[in-house]
Image 1 (cartoon, rainbow, N blue to C red):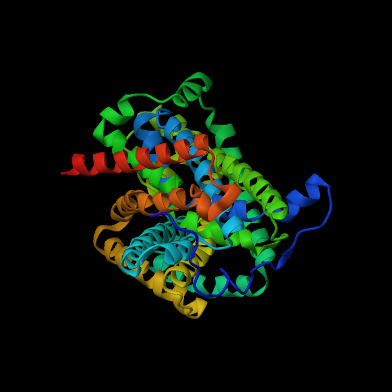
Image 2: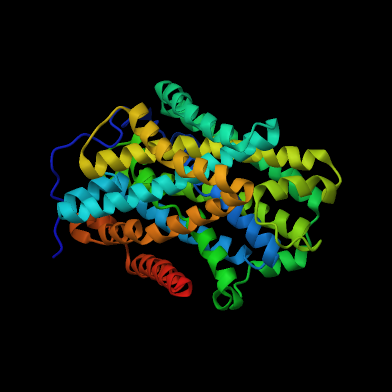
Length: 437
C-alpha cells in the first residue's frame, strides 16, 4: 500500500557537512551552477574506477569496438538513475538508505543493507586491487605489499574530510583532470580507426547471443552503474544550502542534474577511451587475450613505441584508485547510518570495509599472482551488477510516488524509462546466472 513518508527522528544525512556549502542568491546561471558543481564529479568517480579498467580492457582487446555501445547505454542509464537520486535527496531531504528505513519493514531493510554492504566491499575490492597494481607498475613494489599499503588510505581520507567537503570535491576534480590528460594522450598516439569506432556505438545482437561477450558486457554495466552511487548522490546533494521551498528545491534539482549529467559525460569519455585504447592497440595487433591490467601496461610501450604510454597509463590508474577510495568511504558511512541509524567513527567504518576487501585480495595475490587479481577485478564488477536491482527498484518506487514526492513525482515518460532500465538490468543479470548454471 502506498503511503507518505513516516519519518522517524534521526540526524540529517552526513550531518557534519549537511547544508554547509552556500548557494548564492543571484540570477546568474553560471554562479549558481558553480555552487552546485561538485557532487556530480564525485559520482562520476564511481564510473571510472579500476573495475571499469579491467572490464573495458578485456572488452576492447577481445571484441574490438563492439562493446562501446554497452558503455554508451550504461552511461545513459546512469544519467537517468542519478537524476532520480538527486530528486530523492533534494525533495525528500533524505538519502536512499534513510528512505528505505522509513518505508520498509526492518527485516527487508536488513536484507537491503547486507546486499548494499556486499556491493561496497566488491567496489572496495576493485579499488584495493587497482591501486596495488598501479603502485606495482609505477614503483616496482610487489603486489602483496601494494595491497597492504592501501590500508593507509584510511588516514589520508580522514585528513581530507577534516578540511571540508568543498576541499574533498576539489581533490576529486583534480584527479579526474589528471586521468583525462593521460587518456587524451593515449588516444592521440594509439590512432584508433574512426569508422569502426563510430560503428561500435551502435548496439549489436551478438552482445546478447555470445556468452563470453555478455559476461564482459554485464561486467561493464556493473562497473558503470554503481549501486552505492545511488545512495551517495542522494546524500551529498544535501551539502548545498539551497532554500528548502518548492521553488528552491526545483532550482536545486535542475542545477544538480546538470552537474551530474555533465560529469557523467566526462566518465563516458574516460571509459570509452580505455576500451578504444585496448581495441586500437591490442585487438588490431592480434593480442586479443589481454584481459589484465599488467599485460596492458607491459604491451603499450612496445606496440605504441613510447615509454610514456605505459607511464601515463599507470598514473591514470593510480589517480582512479585514489578517487574511488574517497567516494567509497562516504558511501559506506551513508549506508550504515541510513539503514541502521547507527553512527560509528569514520576511521573505524573505513578500516572495517578496507580490511574485508584486503583479505580476499591478499589471498588471491599470494596464491594466483597477477592473473588471479585481474580475474578477481572483473568478477567484482559482476557482483556489483548483481546488486543493482536492490538499489534501483526502491529508488524508482520512491521517486514515482506522488504521496511521497508531491509535484516532483516522476512523470509518466520518466516512470516508463526508469522501470525499463530496472527491467533490463534485472533480466540481463538473471540471464547471466542462467548461462553460468
